[in-house]
Length: 440
Image 1 (tube, rainbow, N blue to C red):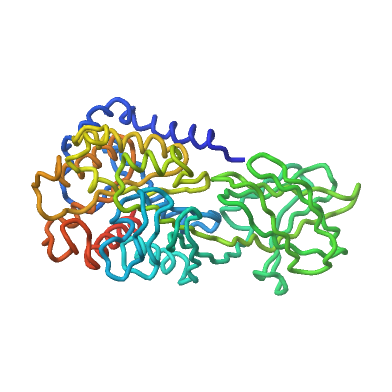
Image 2 (image 1 turned 30 degrees about the vertical axis):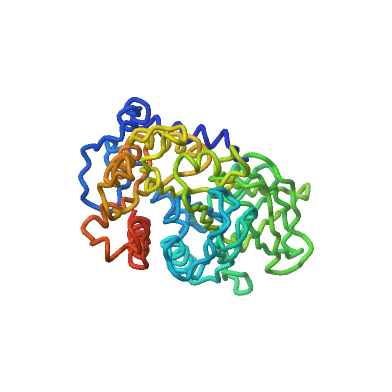
């Protein structure tokens, strides 16, 4: 069974493979200084080891495509740009206190977050209905969307792996028009002195096993083993026909092996375990935890468990993080922190460290704003972009660079005011993110 400790060990081991970049060059990243990576594109993914990016965009794309990844949960962390402020048809924004109880946006609006949600439903879930809900502590809104689709897989093909021991066993497939997928994958045990099993990697909490139960075939039982832990022994007797179904539910696992191990019920004679399909109700949940007025410091204090429930739960797989616009404020010293770019980098490093043991992280650099330079802000959006790029490189995290993608755009064309994107600006953010995801 997957545990937080196990996930933490795996992720830390992955980072050690980067040659110590996350530790040895952390001080350089925290300085917020520009590095040697030019502004050549809108996103940065895993490449040469020296670049240190981690491939999380590719992992997200693969999870959304993989039918054996039954559950994919995505959290969007950010400020009012992630919330969707500035679009005329959005939700009520008051009362609010920069915590998870704040009102959330409405799904029909054209914010980048909602455009991203709709695209996931359209491209990966074939236009499945959007099931809307809200964060339980929030006053109002539609923060969360869930998509579902059903997938039936034939167990005689990869990534399913059959394992046999002993000469009196065998596996073969039989064409059978009455079976769910037109074929049966049959395990045969002739003498009872051998073992055989079917295994496959899995992420999620449940699947349905479809099998044939014909008394004349002497059906075997099977033992279900999830992540090395037995879930019990189950019979395939009783239905006397095709299409028998049993749903197996268990505690959430991430990238663990599922094993279906045949178990004899007769002392002698030939017995069979006849499997038709493994069916998965694949789902994706996307939760917008963007809060108006938030920044990296506020997120650490109010959305990461210090004050109330955490914005990222144990079964969340991916977190997209976009901060920096509000972090530039030249009144930070009034809030017990320096007005400086390396303070922003420190807060982002702390946020990354707090979240990376539980989920895969993807950083996003906000786009340009109007009115720079200004005494209202202690540093620029280019400083923000360079600090985030440095953190991403040295911590092994992918960066979606909206600043690079929008740097040649006129602010009047993409902003509704000096800071917040209009519909065109939100569309550009969504398009850049989706391009990064699809081609990772």
